[in-house]
Every structure is written in structure tokens, then in C-alpha cells.
Amino acid sequence: PAAAPAPAPAPPAAPAAPSPRASGERVFASPKARMMAAEAGIALSQIKGTGPGGRIVMTDVALAVKEGVQTLAAGVGAATGVGTTGTGAVANTGAGADAFARFFPPFEDVSVSQIKKITAARLTESKRTVPHFYLTVDVRMDALTGLRGKLNAGLESGKISVNDFVIKASAAALRKVPEVNASWMGDKIRQYKKADISVAVQTDAGLMVPVVRGACGLGLAGISGEVRALAGRAKEGRLAPAEMIGGTFTISNLGMFGIKHFSAIVNPPQAAILAVGAARKEVVRRADSDGGGYEEALVMSATLSCDHRVVDGAVGAQWLGAFKGFMEDPVTMLL
Image (tube, rainbow, N blue to C red; front, side):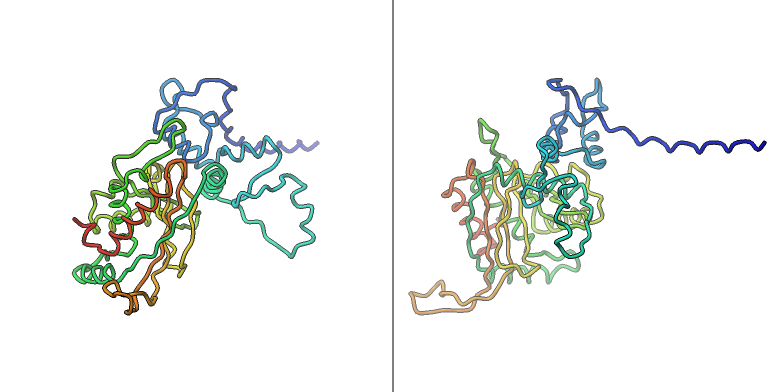
């Protein structure tokens, strides 16, 4: 009789996810790893430490982010039987979620990247827990546009952008009004000695926010080169986790899309974020006129979103006033 065929080899087992620690078990982690996990919205109990004595280090958190460990928001959804959408709306999970699909046109479900999951969780948490308020100011851009043209005329490469001026002016305003360069710590407010500016960059994988370190101490050319390098690595998916952690203030600029005005969501644990729109021409009253003269000017709207636990309305207004002053008289930010 013919021999029975040999059984097919079993497929290799998938690597086991790190088993959650028992409730109440103490977790050892480095300070930077704790901050990195908080930024990513991942509970330390979901991460397996590879440091001495099982201590969690930054590489462990980076691996957890890469492999898609469950975020804090997702854990809450699993425990309660509901999930949250990127807009903060509650959605049913399981088979019941598609119960009404037949009433809608044909559709395609698009998988969500880990970056988008983290962004959705953190922004949902921000809108739920951070008391936002918003302040908007119009900035005259004529002097800045003229100075930018003169500076770029002497550069063969690495032209300076309007956003580079926005970063420089924001850093200078944070130095002038340090109450905005702060974080809510529960029982205290932490004010930072330097301005590390996070810059929102849209990539194919989702929104990334690399940090320009020590922006107060950088010139326009230095800021321009740093932003170009960070944005390039972000779009290529080569940003190191440490390059997206530790910012004290965020800038989101949609001016290149022709957006006039928008309000951004505060990026915890930061206390404020600046939303920048496109420059446009408007007829305004002449600055040297006693009431009868008007002229055409280039104007840009900027909106500051604030965490009211840290920044009061008057303090936010002082910061916007300082920002507006530096932008309208750009030489002063270079001193």
C-alpha cells in the first residue's frame, strides 16, 4: 500500500504580544520612556521591558508603537464595548457596527496606520479633557514679505519660508510671555526655560509633529534647515521617536492650501497651539492716517488655541500681541 502523505508543516507561530502586567504590579521605566509612552498614549503595563531587571527603555516603547500595542483610548473602548472615532464620536464595535451598511452606497474600509490610531486617541483625549479657548489676530505681512525677498535673493539654495518666520516669531513670543511655554501637571504648572517648537507635518502615514529644539537660539537659516531635514525624514518614515517628543508649543500651518482661518486642537501636554492661515490682500486703514486714509495690505490670520487651565485669556492675548509685533516688524525678532 502507498505510504500516507506526510502532514504539512505547521505555520510558524506569530510572536506573542507582551502579556499585560498584573493589576497593581509596579512598572519600572526610564523617565524618557515614560514620557514617550504618554505621548504615544500607551500604558506602560502593555510594554515588555528589555532593560536591566525588566526596566522599560525608549527602544521598548518605540517597538510597541511600531508593532501596534493597544493604546489607552482603545483599551477604554474594549472595556466598555464601544470605540471612538477620530472625531471623538462613539461608534459600536463588533458585528453590530455594520448592521446598517446595506442602507449606504458601496464603500471601501481603509485600514488605519498606527500613527493615525495614536493621533486619533490623543486628539480625542485632548478635546475631552482640555478646556480649549481660541484667540485670533490679523497680521500685516508686507514688511515680512519684503525682508524675506531680500534675504532669499542672497541665497542660492535653502530659501527661507514664511513658516520659518512664524516659528522664529513664536519662539521669541514664548520667551517674552513664558506663561504660554508651559504644561499642566495636575498640582502645578511647569514653565519651560527654552522653546522647543513642534511643527505639524502631513505624511502618507498620517500627521507627524517633529520638534525644532531650541528655536529661540536659532537664526532663520538654522530654523529653515532644521525644518527641511525633519519634514524630509517624516515624509520618508525615518523620524526617530525622540524627534517627536518633548515639544513645548506647536504650529500648524495650512496657508499653502489657501485656508484663511482654522482652529487647531491643543497637543498635550503643551498648553497652546498656533493655527496659521494663508496671506491675503485686504483694504485696511493706513497706520499713519488720522482716520481718512486706506490702503491695500497683505494680511494673515493666526489663531491661538489655549488650555485654559494654564493660559488665561489676557495671557493668551499678550502672547498673540507679541507674536503680531514680531511678524509685523520682523527685524525685532532677529535682535
